[in-house]
Amino acid sequence: MVSRSVAGASKGFTLLELLVVMVIIGLLASYVGPRYFAQLGKSEQGVAKAQIESLAKALDAYRLDLGHYPGNDIGLEALTQKGSASDKWRGPYLQKAVPLDPWGRPYLYKLNNEGSDFELQSLGKDGQPGGTQDNADVSFK
Image (cartoon, rainbow, N blue to C red):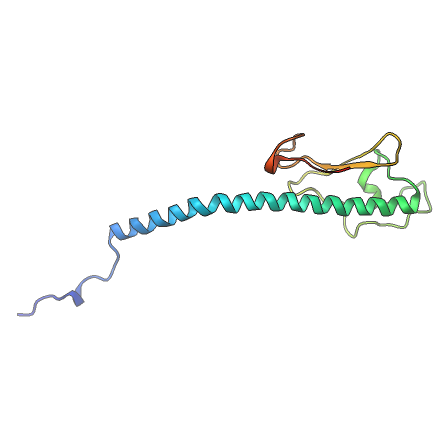
């Protein structure tokens, strides 16, 4: 008589082995996931800071050519579109259109009362003034 040996056994995984692997994958995902998304929030803040600095440099170039910063009525659009009032405009001062912040909202531009300085701001992920971490405002004064 020929008996069945181990060589003839099924070559699959048992349900218990699959469950153990699934638990291990779940534990790894729960450990790595939050760290990944925390880094993503930091990178969005970094992008906002870099874009605001770039816009500030373009606004300074605009001021050097025209002698003043754009008014609140035209805002950042003055960097890409020539206003009707001046022949000194040497723009466009940005290679592309004025970007949105990393959360898809326009940057806030405000010229101070004397016209000698400006403020640029992104309200962060939540779109509300103030906040912490991902929701923190990013500004340039």
